[in-house]
Image 1 (tube, helix red, strand yellow):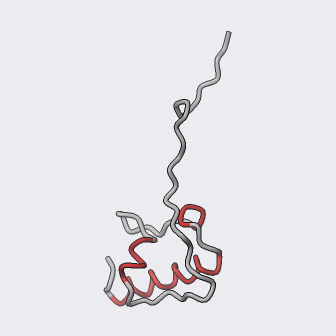
Image 2 (cartoon, rainbow, N blue to C red):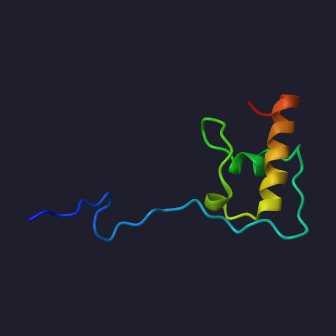
Length: 76
């Protein structure tokens, strides 16, 4: 009899990196490196919105802010 393989053990769940999303009126400041660092990985990649829990508009602001900070030399 064939058994289905499971990628995860019983009872194990994926621990997403959720954070309370930014407020609807909050804007991303390029000079606020601590906030921007939360939205990038250790390798410098921008985390997707499904992991961070932000809206599409906020994700675009984060993307633009990270790119500007990198261009200004504030982030590696």
